[in-house]
Structures are given as C-alpha cells and as structure tokens.
Length: 444
Image (cartoon, one colour):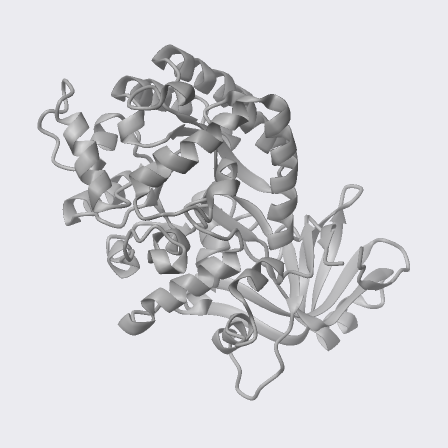
C-alpha cells in the first residue's frame, strides 16, 4: 500500500500540504494552490478540520506546535463524494443491454437481485462493493439493497461512511422469486427502522411493485423512527403510463392524474424523501415536490443515451427544478448507470448539457456530488466539504498542471477531460481516501 510522505513529531495536529478545492454552492468554491489543511484529533484515530489556507500562513499559525506533516504538495484534495441514488445489489448488471427500463429490470436486474437471498453470497458481495466505494471516493449517499433484510444489514456493517440504506419493497406486480407479502414487507421495515433510525430508508422499489397499503404503513413507521424515504419517480414515459394504468384500477386512486400524486396519497413525500430521476414532471408535480420539500437524485449516466451505456431515459431539467426551489443532488444509479465513480457522473452531467449552455459546469457538478447530498441527508454540519469544524473526509487526486488565471472550473476540466483518459480510468482517479482523517484507501 502506497503511503504519503510523513514527518512525525507528536500526533497532536496534522497538517496536510496540498492544493485543494472546497465547494460551497453551484457557482462558488475555493481553489487554493500551495495550500494546507490543518486537522485536529478527535478521539484515538479521527480528525476534524481546524483550519485551512495558504501553506505559509498555516505553518506560521500552527507549525510551532507539535504536528504531523502529510506531504501531498503535488496533489489535489477535494471532499469525498455523496452518491444519492445507487443499488449496491445491481453491480453485475450495470453493462447489460438497456434498450428498455422495464425489460432491463425483468430480464437482468431482478434475477440477479434474487441471488442475494443467500446470506453468504450477499456477505461476500457486500465486502467487495464496500471496497469499491472507498476506491472511488464515495463515502456517503442513499443506497438501495435487495428485498432481503440482511442485505441492508450487510451494507450497514461493511460500508465506510455516511449512508442511508433500505431494502426494496415488492408486494405486487413482482416475480414470484422476488416478492413478499405486505405483512412481511412491513415487518422488515419495522425491524430495520427501529434498529437503524435515521440511517434507514423506507424503500418502495417504485409504485408499480409496492402496494398503497405497504407504502402508507411504511411511511408511518419511517416518520416514527425519523428514517428517510427513497424511491423512483418519472424515469421514463413508458414507466409513467405503466404506473397510471395500474393505479387507476385501484380503489381510491381512480382519479389520480400523475405519478407524483400517487406518492402524495400514500404519504411518501416529505422533507426526508429522495426521489430518483424525476425527469418527466409537470409544473403541478414540481409544485407538490416543492411544497413537501421532497428532494430529487439526478442520475445522468443512467439517463444517458443507450450508446453511452445508459437507459436512454432523457435529460433532467435541473434549471426548472431549481426554479421551483427543489433540492437535488447527483447519483450514479448503479446498475442503471455503468460506472460507480462520481467523476464519471459529473462528466456525464456536463457533457450531456453542453449544447444547451444552461449552466451545467464542473464546479456545479462538484457541489452536487458532495455538499448538496450532505445537505439533503442533514449531514452538512459535519460533512460535504472542507469547512472548518467538519470531519476530515477527503480525497487526494493527481493535480493538473498549473496554468495562469486558473479557476475551479478549469482545474476540474483538465482533470476530467484528459484526451488520453478512458472512461473506465475515472474509477481509478483517486490516489488516497480519508474518512474522519483515517486513511482507508491508497492506490498501489
């Protein structure tokens, strides 16, 4: 394992010498060349950020004390990522044919998820996926496990970072090998919500496979335990038609006019709810999401055209979403998305919106892949960027060559648009991953 060069005195303070980018908002971040981040110990092995700024200033201010110096002076530091929508149990289907969302689910995804019924199989996969998360620098977010309760337990046990996780609920219109009764589904929700509280997410797979009774009862349990809620909304037009065709035949839903209304009637929408995708939403639906303070997880690599290894769902209108003051952040949607790296997600977000010239910048993408997710999970006072007082959660990357008049945008563009770079290379861009100041991954 490759280690950073260190000079040890007495482990009181730690000074990280590096270039860094510290995101604050869509169009606001700090780029510091020849900088330093000062960490202060909390407990035996964890650190929080005490100070940051130009390296000379930091050493003048803190260097007289007994410190440990970590020399990343030729490298770039950014906060760790929050992936706000991904399925850890879909790792093996990310590159399967995706001509149709519903066909992809029934033909590839659901048969694979059924394998997680086996606890040994699920445990082995959880360990592997946990290592991959750390390697790509994702240390927080919103995760879907399989229908099986133990798949949520395993994610909670193995994943390093700040994740909410939930077992998908499927008690109708689901294959026999991947379904449970309404009673069984609700029992799993009650058990896991009581056990994990705010780390748990009530997770109806989506409205077609989860009965109104289970969603409504589950939402009540989630509120009681202060748990989150996550599901899918308006990913494709065919999906919307399918959902409405089912629900208009159900008692009490005969007059529903939209997909969003179904979730509203089942008490799913709230300030702790995250909707995956939300591409095809009317003004009325956006008003409902805004009123209920529901957030959206946008997944550009999953929504991308099939030729770009996505599902071809369409382009998310983030400007319109922001006009309605709806919170949103980025997600990889593994396995609808082909790669776990949030760098790939950021690049896809910028590239897909390039022709529209609508403000889809790398600076915005970095904020939406870090602090915006922490804000949705109510973790922004502890994580999401490099502000003083937060946990030392950061990634060390290769630093692009210094250029005159550079900005956060130009540095990120140099980092992610290297012509020699293959798309798969972005999965291996991170050189070191730190969580709460502790080194969890180093590139060999």
